[in-house]
Length: 447
Ligand code: GUN
Ligand code: FE
Image 1: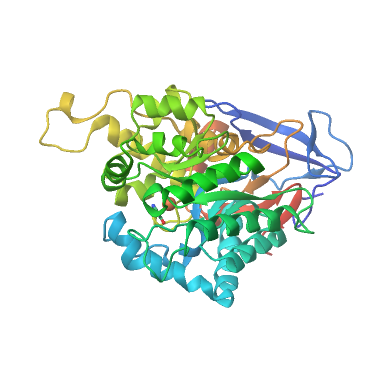
Image 2: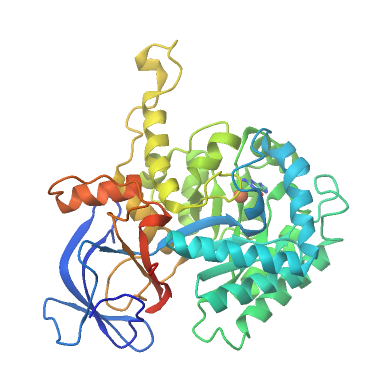
């Protein structure tokens, strides 16, 4: 039987599968039989194939679903545009006016619906979303993720600082930001259709510059009280990094820790200007980093030292940063993470001597990028997905490298690991044939 249009709960799937449970290496599992239980958990992996097994169509490969560790869901209409200004101007000129429009729940419904369809069709089975300051629209995003089956962590954005946030788009005060964050946590946790907790709330101070001390402190207390995860931005650009130092006398990382926001599974977006001590503090707290290599080109003023962060034991995953990054797929983030690391290693200014141009040993491999795009992101979030291991949830995608509308070139016999390389460098939405979360089919192949 083929896997076309087929949910896998209570069944066994036979596939040629790739996964990267550990950073830096890939396992190829040819003809593996993966049994999924009635709740969508992987029960066992075996070479014994039951008679009623479902088979992936010939030529397709099974991969773990992709994890996007940094998405601004409301910025989807702006994807692929408005990247001509530095971060602090981009926020005021383009982004805050767009996000303010989500006071209209009809607009929220329409865009969030299109975003989640797009992400699932690209193979993104897990996403960590910033929403807006609006509680009703943020509830709608949670409803849509629950309905469509994306594993998602969703935050009402908290931003109450009158010096950095415009009057038309900010929480009126710290109390409101905190109370409404609590209301979203209660809404998602008590949602009648969210039984398995596939959608989770996340405490979301936008970044230190946008929040008052009272707001940051209150959100830190709320995280400790409820055990809810935290996400924010850290040390993204020269401006942000310097702004926090000038205001608090601390590094951005130290300030977040001071307010109780660096916790297990806190995800920090960008993190480009971390000192060695900042990295050690993040690792100590079991927080992680969302590396957004596309967005960093436009806003960061530097390349994130990914190899160094991994060597220091940081948990790292990949983010599109829709719409700070112009392309909304983790395929693009994965290949750009490799390319950016190569630019950091070689350096970029041809007028400099080769030995002064770059940072030796900065490159990462395509295998590392694959890990970050799957299990790495899941580990940062503390989620039981991202690899084909008994006890993990079955979130997976079927890739058809030969899809006619795709751009992967494979002529003659391509050995498996070369095929994976081609998939990471070339896959687009066109190659994603099927998508499952919790063993349930969420995207089926075009007829
Ligand atoms: N820092 C604060 N807000 C934002 C945002 O919306 N995008 C990015 N890239 N950085 C931010
Ligand atoms: Fe961001």
